[in-house]
Length: 229
Image 1 (cartoon, rainbow, N blue to C red):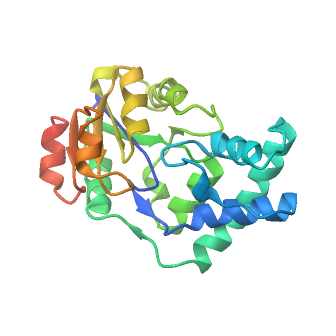
Image 2: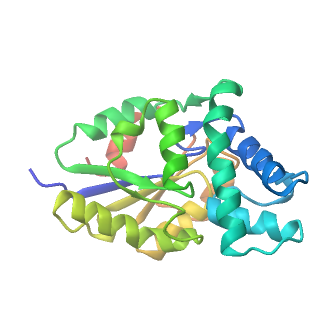
C-alpha cells in the first residue's frame, strides 16, 4: 500500500528532552575552540538551527561568522555531544512519543521523518542515545540550511524519493514545540501540530494558529484523529 500522509518530527522538546546536553556541548565546544566562555542563555535559540545558533554565538562574542569558524565550532560541538548525553542529567523520550512512533511506523499509509534544527549527525547522536533513531529513514537538517523555513522542501523531496510517491503539502503534518516549527510548516502549506512539551506554553503556541495543539502527545487516539488516520 502506498503512503499518503507524511509526518515530520522536530526533536528537542518534541520527541525528547536531554536536560541541556546540547546546550552544554555547544558552550563547551565554543570554549574549547575559541578559548573564551560562552553563555547560550543570551541567545534566543529555541526552534533555531544549529548552524544559525553557531553564527549568532560567534557574532555575540565579536568573532567573524566565517564558514571556517562555523565549521570548527560545529565539529567541536559534535565531538562533545555524545559525552554530554552520556554524562548529563537523565533525559527522556517525552510522554506518549514512543507509542506514537511505533503506531505510525506500522501504519500502511503513513510515512514519518525528521524536520529538525539539529545537524544530521547531532540528530543521530541524540535519537540513538534515546533508542528511537531507527524510526527515521530521512529528514531535513541544519546541514541543509541555517534557516528553518528552508527545510520543508528538503524534507518533502527526501520523503518522496524514499517512498516513491509525492506527498502533498496539505497531507503533510509538521510536529514541533516552538512557533518556528509552526511557521516553517505554513511556509510550505503543510498542517502543523504544536506540542507544549518544550519552552512554550499551550496558550503561546495556540496564539500562532497551528492546525492543532496538544499539551503533550500521550493521547495516541486523539493524534491519529487529527491526522485522519
